[in-house]
Image (tube, rainbow, N blue to C red; front, side):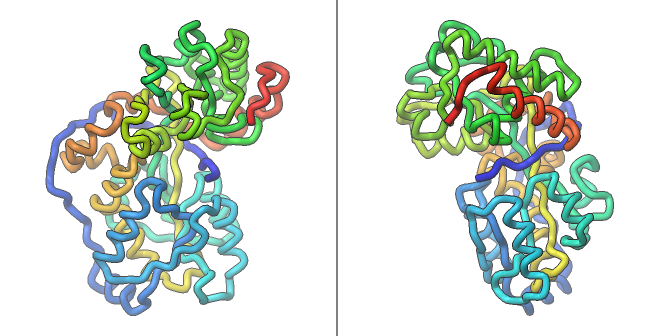
Length: 367
């Protein structure tokens, strides 16, 4: 799965946690009727094990009785955009109604006339910094980079980036991708630079490279792309990955070995995905009803169940809408309060430094 891109977003400093019944913002009866008349929604690039999408899709089908035609679950953001372009005049089953893409694809798709505006009924609770003012695209969920730790092997888990240089972690630290190509890995290097106090994006990228150069020189870096299997086997007992990936690995391993997911104390870098409706959607009302469901309390909590923080998380938490059993499966809510979402410009500046200088500064061939 191609990692999706990020954006600067201020998080509120207080999250009041309580249990409550799930309240769902209901769309209009007219929209529901129009969507049911269309009968089908066509999605793309929504694997069932990604952010709880399997249950989210099932919930939508059960609630409204529509069919969901799922195209290419393993596609990436670029593939989704190409699918819209390739089906501009096609109303058949290969034309997607909706897309879930990285942030950078939202503004570019709008500029190319590939998506249409629609503001969901919960629009006001979506942070302004995570949505297009005209409603062409809006953030849906986010994750933060974390340390995913096999605690069978690592007894004293790292709490912050600087810990990864300790001799305790010899041959233990891996990235979840090649930083010369993977956005998830690039953002991990960038986060390490931010943890050093560097604010400028390009300088943060270089500071992150210097950090990983030290981790590698200390003999702690493992030049292997970390995955669930390598985590379990112990060849990469500490993997730097999006929290939702780590939490999903933890569940799939089911205690064998035990896994802890730690959000670092500093340099907390987050990434947000965005939703949009195709400008050529064969089922435009079904697409709007899908958006209403995704941004209702029920849909948002469906993503949280899959370990992706929904974009309305702060609003839900403040109003006591997040069940305690969900919160108990996540790192502490306070750990997310320092999260920073780099702008597209910041991402590009950091990425350029990291991808072009990794070999020279770190010298580890990740594969």
